[in-house]
Image 1 (cartoon, helix red, strand yellow):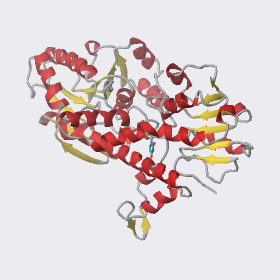
Image 2 (image 1 turned 90 degrees about the horizontal axis):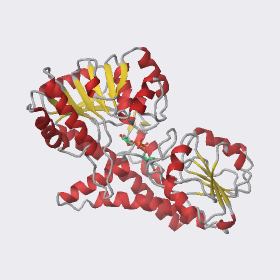
Image 3 (image 1 turned 30 degrees about the vertical axis):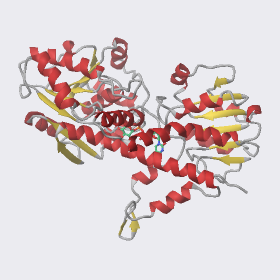
Image 4 (image 1 turned 180 degrees about the horizontal axis):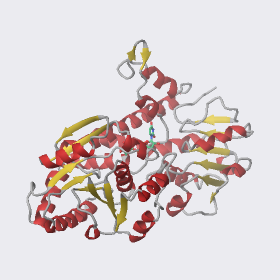
Length: 446
Ligand code: UDX
């Protein structure tokens, strides 16, 4: 199939390349000409496992190209996928300005094209955005009616750090459709994918995406609330509590006498809270949307409130170390999780802001995210970003590990007997030989 993708950011580029890998002809459109030039030269503008190789392969196969405008398209397209950002504004409302602009441009484009084109939203958008908001713009701009063009919604479930695998081997594909031709096109497009397909209307597809993310965020916040309680009580390890919970057969059924151990149980870990480009913005957007519809949205509010406080919970634990102000601290991990250079809503931002005036010095390291992080918190007298973290272990009194890059495991090779180790992501075994091991959800009082 010949496909144009509007937006060559994280979702657009990964989607475009994975569809190209499946022998489709893909054109990724981005207004930023520098990004377009770099992509065509094989240089992606963000880090993602396997991305450089995939881009090189698809450019070489000549199935894939980036363009700066839909007007420059060099193939007859059947499908346009909108994969632009839908950020939060200051109140947490979803900002649809990129969707609006993309829809207007597409409307003008389909006006000039005689053949039937389906427009499919991949960006995360609130229910009714596709069938009411986008449809209206397309009809106004093109002077055509739904049916003359097609419309659908096909949400993404890509986790940063494993996005290519998630696209190529998904848990499910959700196909939201407003006209039969689009439904058939999407079914055909995803026919090589051997997974369950859920075929629904667009607004259901939109709500599946939000519900999915909010349920995951809910479980993280719930596990964090109980971790905070376990810490307050003392002599409880929240990991033991969760292990007890995880043996309930409704979470973890047995088959042929063996536990199935579903992925959610490995995913869930109490800690310093979730970040990233999806969970915080999606929970806020659905909270505000529900409130506007007259609901209280108490669960969505609590998910956010608990998460916002979680960095401070960690700082409180650290403040229990005597003379924190005399100690140097080495922070390992700045991105919102390992295997990405994305620092959006990373708990490290709040933690560093709250810690920097309470300690003697912070040395901060991340294998990929230092450059992005310094744009948010520039280096300062008490905050130095370091490339070779191994050189700073001896000089630091406290080591705080904020994400789980594999390379941090090397810490185990150092003599840590005089160090405090703060490990909210549970990267290390709590019996590690350190002066004191501290984390969320574990407070061993004597
Ligand atoms: C998420 C969804 O998983 C994906 O399906 C969706 O389409 C995009 O949003 P992502 O943001 O890449 O993906 O990361 P994910 O691995 O889900 O983690 C999100 C955040 O939650 C990270 O900051 C992670 O460290 C944190 N997290 C996760 C916790 O704090 N505790 C947990 O128990 C699990």
